[in-house]
Length: 169
Image (cartoon, rainbow, N blue to C red; front, top):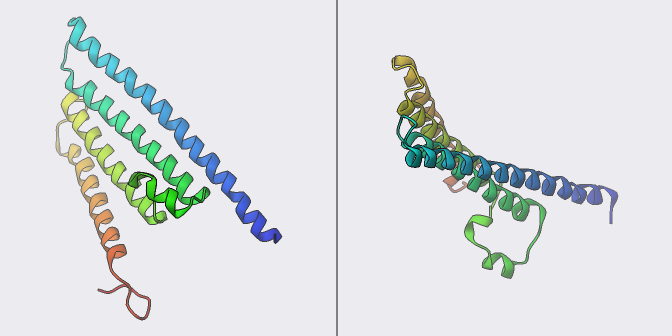
């Protein structure tokens, strides 16, 4: 085997290590989500803490959702970029474990960030942590801009190529 090819193939180890790091982060997020749910349960069952259970449950849901996405990323990175599986095995794998390219992975990540920001904004609003004036509109405006950029970038990738290799207008 050529030295350059051997070197490039050895980079798969780094990709697997990155996927393991993402999976470890997911485990931590699941633990954090469970802790937040336990806090929400205390609000309901002890009754001595003022406030609603909605905020803690929203925060727990957001954390658990992000942990689930990290698991999807770990599988997608592993099976999309580090481990080659046969077509037969790939067809048996769930769709969420297969990423076609890095752009699909990036689109998923940006989508998760948008959802995270929306839930974070709603949680802050519900808990009344944010000051209630026009400044609070900065986060939703940012969310709209990120979502709009994601939509524009996604539609650019969806266009079929022209004969000269460029994207159609």
